[in-house]
Length: 170
Image 1: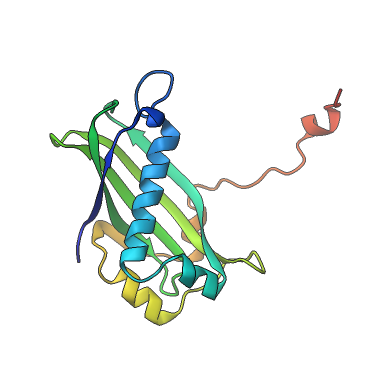
Image 2: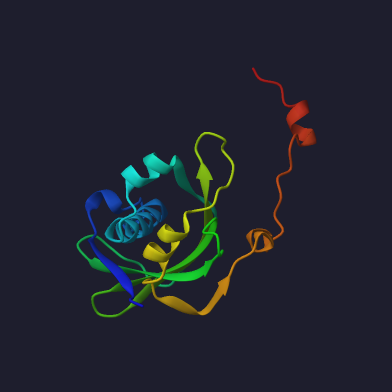
């Protein structure tokens, strides 16, 4: 299994008002790294169109250690932290390092694949699971995921809060 990594040069447009990399830019670098990995293993947008599926993120936890500024180059790594046997759920781990080895960021995220017609979670073909995920380095705490793992934080929607019914539009 191989550690997948991708380098990025920090551009002016990646910065926020504090003149360091914006949170949204980090998320874009990590998303780009994940898609680059999938594409390098024969799972690209055309495959998603053919299967009528798309990836969705359930949660993403980002831990920042050191700032990154304009003109720096970072390396984003990708490891597999968890996967359901049917490919419906995945959990990834990203680390972001500077050229000098400084650890700037650690992120873990969980998501799944949805059928774009039914808008429901869906499984992946067994051949695709093997082709895409067998080669990706796993974390030391990798686990096979079950549906229950997707709710490990016990955060649930709170529909129609009381304050909403009292809120009048102007």
